[in-house]
Length: 220
Image (tube, rainbow, N blue to C red):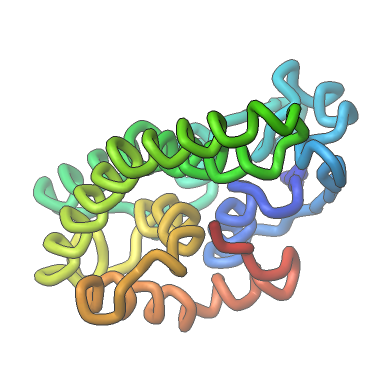
């Protein structure tokens, strides 16, 4: 049976959704973040050298990285479910699976890190400089990048109910984490197709089951 090593408020939430959607039995071991640093506890390094989540174990095989885990589960357990069927769908699928972690998540992580700068302990005379740096990077780089990403996703979803067409695939599960995390940044008018897309995600039985297991994801 698959064991999910789940770090609270992490990407591993979508692996729980995937398994719930497929009806694949699993066990879950939950780890709490350090209350001060918000980092994963050292125990996760006993499972994988980087000590990150998600990580799964299956019959002695340890697999890390969301995309790799999703591919493994689909190949072994899905029997074609949640996978693209046509060449066009496969093209969309490949793009969004890689885009989620390769392009969108890095800018979100950078945004989160810079937003924490004003809260960090530092000498009082340094704080104004730190805030100025944070504002400059946010205004000149992070915010424009996020606008471009959201505009591209909005444009795509204007003509697609799901990322690969008219049916849910694992690419939607992969993309769910960054988009749900970004929800407070969405404008109901400017991003109405993304908002509607997230509402469709929240109606999925597998997603609702995952929430019962690991709880809702906090937004950024």
